[in-house]
Length: 153
View 1 (tube, rainbow, N blue to C red):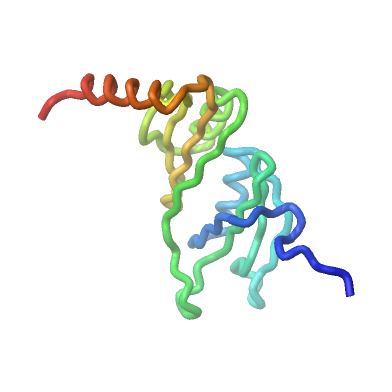
View 2: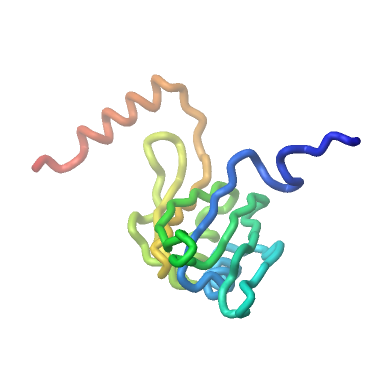
């Protein structure tokens, strides 16, 4: 018998899963906001909810399903990071689609340009682009300068 790869093709050893109220609507939103591609969808027997779906964002798979409290699966927030080129265009797309800005897109002390937004399902999305390679020492020095610049309470 041939050895079966323990990780399904196209997935990684860690795959995020979003348990949401309104998975079908969320998938449509993620297509619009992040350019997600729907890979597959398995509706529940009623056809009103999604037992399991897989979307792909920038080549990374994310599982999306409806919450089923009667089966012990409650809706819960999550935070996902999306790295890639042209973060400005990706940020514009997400916020124009309806994501709410929690932290504006800006260059960060660790070498990324990054911003934080949330969707109506309370999922937090960190959109980022690595823009500067830094040593651990350079990051620490930049962190200290950032902390020193923060307003004192």
